[in-house]
Image 1 (cartoon, one colour):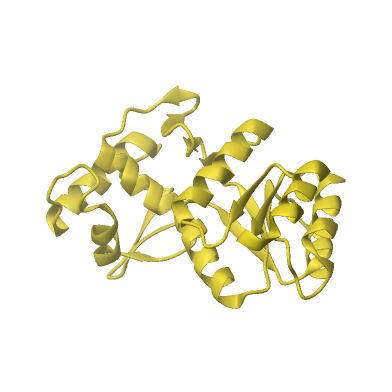
Image 2 (tube, rainbow, N blue to C red):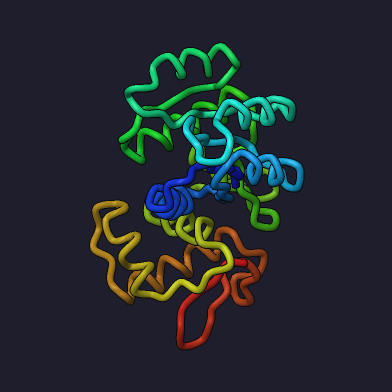
Length: 220
């Protein structure tokens, strides 16, 4: 799971982006200014930074310099009126920029493009199972596992919500149209069983997709 540092002082943008990016399989840490961002860069590891050019504390250029010292790519978040700043940022070595307001899907596409170009890993690992979220490929012990569209979507939901309890109604909402098929509570049970048979060492005693009795499922 790629780790993103979002440097933004608009709380509404932070809340919406963090939720959306988490749903796309990214782990997101946030900072509201340059000093906090630099402290996090010193303490933690990240794969890419999303940086607002205009910050109440410091500026995006300072964050970009700190990121480049660690070899980390930066995507600037900028307003239409900051064209000259965009040029400056690109000249400094920023990997990309996106103009506000932007569509979240476009931002995700930019992020994945930057990760791909920088050669950073987009593979999520669950024990011996590896999920390449860029290629849509799942392997176990190095061998590719053939999954249906619905099985892959179900696994993706679990991967994107590791450590969280997922109730059955939430899972149904997430996967009902993944393959254009109708999915009800009974078929959800069947698909979880099929998925376990493909990724678990012992499907009868699952170690990856765990049942929380009377509540739902959880992947740690």
